Image (cartoon, rainbow over all chains, first blue to last red; front, side, top):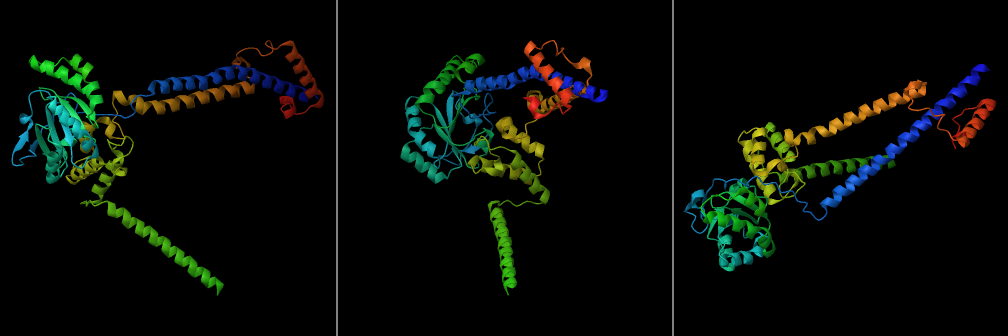
Length: 217
Length: 185
């Protein structure tokens, strides 16, 4: 009798112990999901409206990759890095097969009228198609280089056409625009960057890195 | 008679199933037009296009993508594999142009330590925590009293104390299982 008396008592005690401990723990453990949730909310809210595409380009802040490619208008002439302009310019990768390039083309014509120096890279295109494309829509490029194999584009870290690179007077790539160039991104990021580069080029020194970082980001 | 009919039906079905499998395999083979010198080269190529990411499509590997740039990169990978280059060489070629983004298996270096080591560390930490917790519970359950943070009896309100006495007296008199559902209420 005395044995059975003792055992339930002890059990009762243990249950009680466990309950008090659980109560305290519960308070803390209830907070954990709440804190995690709040953290997540803040994180997600901060990202709202920001671009979601990851652009990982290694060509930036590096010289234009070495190339040896024929001129589109006269494929017997081989162009190299030395033939690139020694003033800041835009390097536009295009193809007659690329729908966005066709949309972008009139704006490139307008940029040429505004006195922007454009160099075209004709990317994996049939030469006949490419030339008739330029005849039809006009040729905004001071020269077009033929990249039939797409190797040069690969060296540039191209993801598709059209893409545009801003190159400074020293042949260093300063900005990479994926997709079309239009009035909006011209005003927003291309023109400011180009102005800084032009300014530096006029003074005959390399552009100030902090200024470039500010304007060409 | 009937049994024979059923068997022929089953055989026909099996044959058509095998045919379907064979046909789909030829369809799969028709997509890949690359020829390799050896099985190893083909395996290397397949491994690489599974591992490398298409730079245009944000979240697709080269094997799964039909984007023009993915086709170019597959061609490049093929050329380099044919050329006898190693995985590391091909990977570094791609990384030089497209950065860490190009591969689904980023290299281990200080900037990627968090990526590589945080999940296993978290797992270890959680397992250790869980062990510690269950060990403590066990000790408490065994009645090793010094593991208890505070005295539970002191924190009881008079009402709780009365309830406790009632339950205790009941369990003593009835001598029944204290963990029965009725008492848990």
